[in-house]
Structures are given as structure tokens and as C-alpha cells.
Length: 157
Image 1 (cartoon, one colour):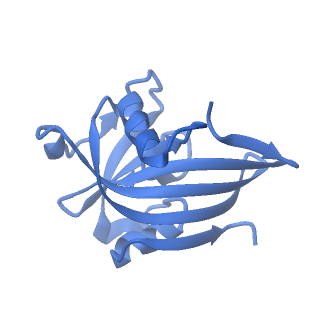
Image 2 (cartoon, one colour):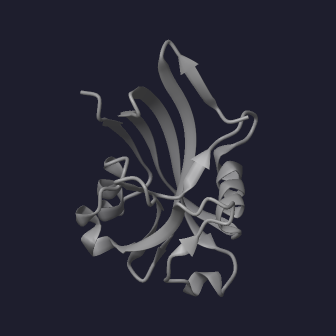
């Protein structure tokens, strides 16, 4: 069961995500029906640590094994989506694909769970400001390249 709780009309989420960077390109996650990008990951389940959750999510969504190579940031993220307010705690890791062939992928990666609207796209870090990546603070963290760091992103104020 995901750690997603309705607390007085606000949703509390615990999420984990990753930064995989190849040839100065960042792997991003996108729902083709939405207007923004995010870094790949998913919700942490009760009793599961964030690193294990990330490995599980990537395997479920992409069918790829990853290894965690470092820690990037913790983001306290406050936002509204579909008329609901969210308070999200996000743990972001540096990661790399385990398989040598996967490390060479530069094309879009399709979701393997049957969710055709989800895909994974590479964006050039030098052009990161041209993309609507959420939470917004992740752009700053990636551009600065100084980890680990704690950030607060509050789109509600």
C-alpha cells in the first residue's frame, strides 16, 4: 500500500525519484496528456525504504534494473493538482542502469505496464529551463550539481 494519506482534505504523499544523466541528458517521465515533466520514480509503500521503492518502481514501469550511485536531494513539495492540495516528501537519488546496453539508450523509453500515455524522455540539461519540470526546484538542483541538498517547493503561496 502506497504512503498516500488524506489528512483533512490535503493529500500526503511519500515519493522517491531518480536522476539518470547520460551525455548531458536527463531522463524524465511524462504523461503525454499533461503539460509537465517529472523525474522518474513513484510512491513509497508502507514498510519500504525509499531506495528499494525506487528500484521496484523502475522495474515495474520500465523493466530496467538500476543501481543507486548517490543521493541528490530531499524535496518538501506543496502543490495543487486536480483541485486537491498535496504535501509531498520526495527522496531523489542519483542512479544508473545496471545493464550496459541500457546505459546506451538515448531514445524514448515506453512504459511496460500497459500505460501507453506514460513515457520516459531524455532532455538536454543545457535546455532544462525550456521544459516544465515539476517540482520546479529540481531544475535548480540539477543545474547547480551540488548534492545532497534539502529544498522546499511551495506552489501554494
